[in-house]
Length: 183
Image: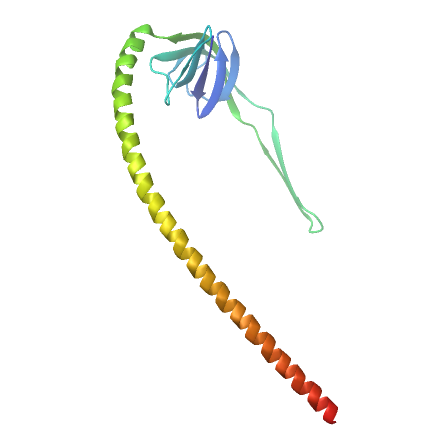
């Protein structure tokens, strides 16, 4: 049995008896922490995925200690400029031990009835999304067609300018060659 839990903005895969390090929590050492943000719950091959959370699932953990992580060295250098800066920091961590992972059965039944209501709402939402998608696709195709025609016009103008520039350069070169022959 395992669960994926969000603790202090990070996601962890936890099992019973496991010790993990998370960002610093405000609870005192020895206190129990109840983690309600369970994103996924697995028990004997049956996986429950939340949307976004699994209803009724809870992980109980005990705060073992507060500590600092190893020092992280931040070294900046720009070569040939004489610029060197060395800084560092240590993250504040909390060591947790997972005591229990549970999915409450009473809330399972309630979630089944709520899923029927949610499924009805989602089908209505999907129908409205399809109609708006058709409208948007029609608008985008119209924009694409107008963009293509403007691109064709622009390319025609540029090719006309190039052709006229070539002919004028040929005329100018012919005049200069004629002048050189006369001299």
